[in-house]
Image (cartoon, rainbow, N blue to C red; front, side, top):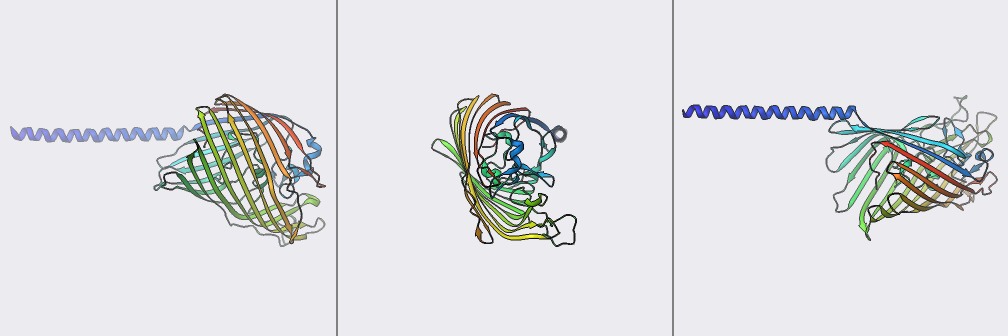
Length: 432
């Protein structure tokens, strides 16, 4: 009898263990099914941005004849399939852009996200990248095309800006798209009591204002003339960011550097044609302070300072034959900043002011200072009303004192703009 009882107990234990094993297997299968289902059904969001703008000068007669001296020229002309950062813009109603975002977890190891920037003329892959989710030692890696974490504002998308446009110094040094490139990113959160993150990025090195990789020659027709070779030297970006509580609020601060080669070719502009090849380095520091008086009542102080040094040769082609008209040793040391204050009264209403200026604009050609003006600034004020988390209207006034005519005289621009921003679908919270 005793043997029968022991045998029954053993058999029951085996059957119970098998049942547990079967249950665990079924549960694992359910988890895998959910993961596959999530991967097949990504979260989707659509953001549409529209506006109405009125300005105090005739864009059609002015746009091709204004510049930010030593920084941006041509007023927005097309150059070899891309356009310079816009200086004048369009009056009246505009459909600024639509942003389509898709994202999901691939598996236990990666998330995938794609962001598509759509205008009435083109569709662009703004970002498309995979991000690791399970690396050890507080590490995170990203691979694909993405906004660099250089500085504070660069990683953000246009709809999350506190103003209708990007600050002057970003427009001048990084252009309308900022540092947005193909490459790899590695970030590490240090084991400190306060948040401290260091990051390294190795990027392809394309940028409309400060970097570039493609070679060039005086004309496309003559392939035998020695031009400037392209480069495969990557753009390297490094930064450190920290955050801690102070004076009843939270401070986020960072320092960044971007170093790479510069190949900028504008060789289709007739007498104004020129190109540049050399080295480019941009340094940046940023600070953002937020203080919440209540859930929806807060004040935010934000600012960045950027410094760029370009060193190399400027090439001016001869329009009558396949040769360089001149080759000039060019060195640029340029810097500027923006600072802004935004007060949020409640969930619906916010208002703010921003001031951005160029404070250094030293351009040396063959060792001779060209004495370019540094009296360059833009001031803006805005008020916005949020109907909900998904719809917003913003009224902004801007006084732009950064634009100069070809003869060197300043052409001030005053502008009033209404921005309408709408969003549908799954959209995560914006970063600090």
